Amino acid sequence: MRILFVTSEAYPLIKTGGLADVSGSLPAALQHLGADVRILIPGYQSVLDKLKNSHLLTTIHGLPMVGSVELILGEMPDTGVPVMAISCPSLYQRAGSPYLDTSGREWEDNPLRFGTLSQVAAWLSLHEDNPLGSWIPDIVHCNDWQSGLTPVHLYYSNKKCAKSVLSIHNLLFLGCYSADWVKRLGLPTESYHMNGLEYYGQMSFLKAGIYYADSITTVSPTYAHEIQTAEYGFGMQGLLAARGHEIHGILNGIEMNEWNPATDPHLANAYDVTNLEGKKQVKHALQTQLGLAPNSDSPLLGVVSRLTHQKGLDMFLAVAEPLLHQGCQIALLGGGEAELEAGFKQLAQRYPQQVSVTIGYNEPLSHQIMAGADIFIMPSRFEPCGLNQMYGLRYGTPPIVTRTGGLADSVQDSNPITLQEGTATGFVMVAPDAQHLLTSIHRALAYFREPRIWQKIQRNGMSRDLGWDRSAKAYLEIYSSLTSIAD
Image 1 (cartoon, rainbow, N blue to C red):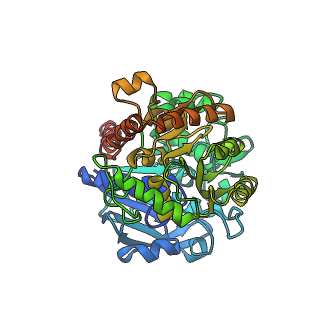
Image 2: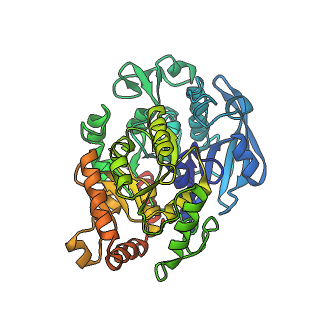
Image 3: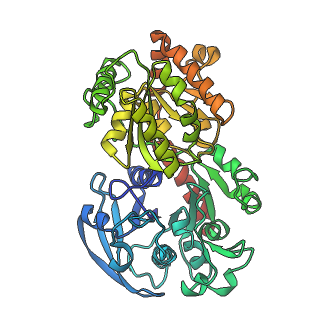
């Protein structure tokens, strides 16, 4: 089965969030199961620099507002999965992130940048007049709003083409732009209506994908149900509910080799589920590195996150000071809303030996915090899947989470019943507010002070199979059902 996997980021080529981790890992897992997968991604400079064995594959002509682009074929540096990068310097080779300029503002031409990604993906998915000639996909797997227009182009092509799957990683990001982009991107005018691209007077890339894709997936079973409700549907719950029987919730996995405390090169010491002693050395090294008091008895609370309202870190900031007075320490890595960044920085200034705040992206430090912390804090108000809570489980750092989305699907609350059953892996908040977060942290600290019970919780989490095989097989089943319908 040939699968064209379309994404706006993929680790280790380029990363801003969890989508990159999924886009780096899932295609490799599919390939391991025998699928013929190619990733399609914009040719950011970082992507072109990191591709292995790259060469010009073909030139694609006739793109609206762009004209021609080159398609570069290479390989992922770690897995060898084939990658096709769209080389168009005017669109993709510029300072900043894939979505934002150097001052943090969205690129004004993002509709064109990702409209082009969607258009190229659609043309590569046609079974006739295909620019690739011999490699014609059976499935085009689109991810989030950035490739949401691909199913629209295929629907109106009136040609035999690949079946389309859209994965919703976060419904919060709808890809909404002014309606004049419909014509500018060469989309049929008849696609712009309530049963199509139109979303409250704008065009929405994500709504387009939801409406026109042959199948829809979300990144956890709970999130698949949540997005069909008013609370989490962002105005599209009606459309999503109408397509509910075609929405499949598949919990993400993690790259087990990349996130492995026994072999992680970023850690001061190795450890595993059978020997947790090394984790103490990792904690000591992290405390020393971050300028925290190197006290093994001080509970170290870790945060690796975007600092946004969604992630609930305002709740943590609200209860941080009482926890510091109780002897806790905090190691935070992330960035986002200016008010939250400032609040945590001020906390670090007041408690320099107890609080470390690093603003920005730092892959080695994210591993070190995940391994060196005692407890991982992740009180998201909603979380489609989340990967960091799984990294916490993998590294013996029990997470504190909200009962929502993938957090509910991956973390089992620790209480007398689950401890007896051997299923306890973390701590689940009853409700997303500061008081319930504080209560959950206090529950965790009580178990932390009982080493025998705490190690049982750690080992339960570390023993879980968090890899991609099960999820990749579920995706293959969806692909197969679509292609059998087509046959």
